[in-house]
Image 1 (cartoon, rainbow, N blue to C red):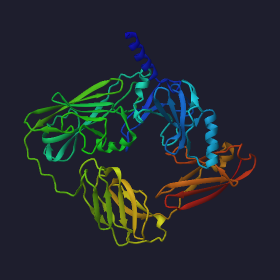
Image 2 (cartoon, rainbow, N blue to C red):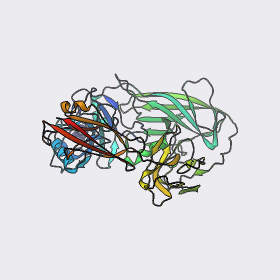
Image 3 (spheres, rainbow, N blue to C red):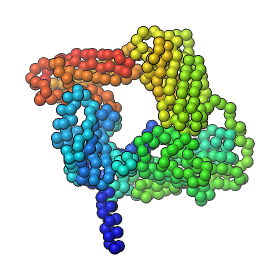
Image 4 (cartoon, one colour):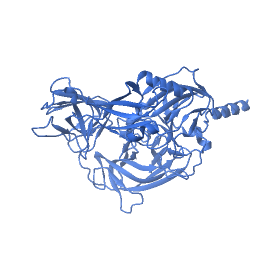
Length: 541
């Protein structure tokens, strides 16, 4: 019966191979699990040779299961395949065939560029190699490419797509490390006589000394043959004196795990220890102490990192920490939020509530209040570095003045260390208090926005020639929330094809508007505080 086993294994392998979504050879601009500002990169970014409009093909037999147009991902096509996986094709420039017409009709019907629907499994079946769309640069995209997520249907989790294309990818370049960090634990460890996290270069000649409990972290990227892109590292293994103490395996994650990236990383370095409130399943500690290393002997401790990519290319780097007995300063008595607790802060007009399970570790904070008699509210600071939350915290701020009667014009602003303000929203349940939720604790104040957005037509002299209307809509405080355009009194389909540029674009359709004459465009844009701008333009088409 051995031949049956071999046949079953071969069939399974074949069923998990995907076809190339493009006709040209596969090359990537981004890989699975790359570290982003507030999430893990959920898929592969396929290069499209620097151009939009490349034909995108089905990877296997299946059916189109969901169709979306969004500001974040542009034109999006979900395809459910018969092998137990679903793919999400993002940033397309257009859909193919009858789907394109159906989406456009739905946009006009709902008078919205952003739409979505879920067809029945028998409505849009696809075969391997069938045209399903066109590569693009829509949504939050910095250049033409196809972003491809692979979802395991049995778990709903994002999985690394690269193994599905392994036979089509040529790569012999291993990951490379660029530096490491050491984290002496507060009140329990010291490194080079200091208690702060410290960054180091590999190959340094100065001795590294430590005593007590420390954690390590590494900064590294993967690379591939023939391109200059940097990628995330699939597997990181830390051994101390030959014993494995930590391993990260970036092969899958659930959507709700994304925010754990704030706990695992520090300034782009990947920690080789696990914060007590971090439940990220791709992290594994083997020494019974969350990956923290105890330096309690006056001898050299040998740290070795092994870095591997999804195709098995491997590199190693190492460094030595000399155990040297030294005094470990007591933990500084600071106010802190406990990671196991419900945390409440109610001081000088600020009320803050952090739900239990929102913090990754005990988080010290330095509470400061500033402001003068003319400020709408005090400004409240909790420290220079932000404190990230896994679940949103509640912020309520008491207003000292109401220069504007309209409550909708007030918002809570987060202030960066460089002084840049960013709206985090807010509602006023009373005349004196504004309330909002936040995933990040830092510096907050209350601002008022009474300035409407600004509309700027882009080359209106060529609108009639190109059949394409472009308008820049900008709002410097709370941002553009909604927009709507009409031409000759009828709804006009404006969209924001690329969210980086932010331009509002309408492609004129002769099936919906009579060609050959003068037309009036009315564009209305509203910001998040309800300030409205309406402009009128005339053009000939």
